[in-house]
Image 1 (tube, one colour):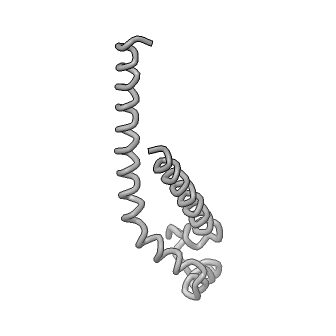
Image 2 (cartoon, rainbow, N blue to C red; image 1 turned 90 degrees about the vertical axis):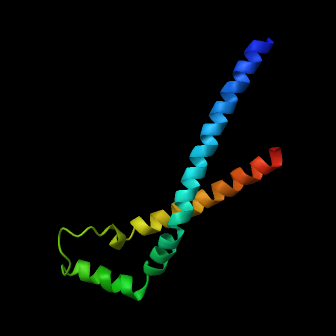
Length: 101
């Protein structure tokens, strides 16, 4: 590989890395901003209030046009599972990045 080709490849690596880091930083900002709402959702899910709301839905006491994915038994559980997997993935990626820095 000659000098020009090497510099071009490294320039591509710089651009790709800079964009990925910027994108991850923005996503992490959104993720961190959502954590308060996420913790609130986790406290609600499975609580006595959630159960009352779920039973009201099952009894037809809620408006039919009300968005209520939070009352499904899978939506919040799946989100919690995805969050745990993502957290584990972030830890592994961070450890690998620090190790190779």
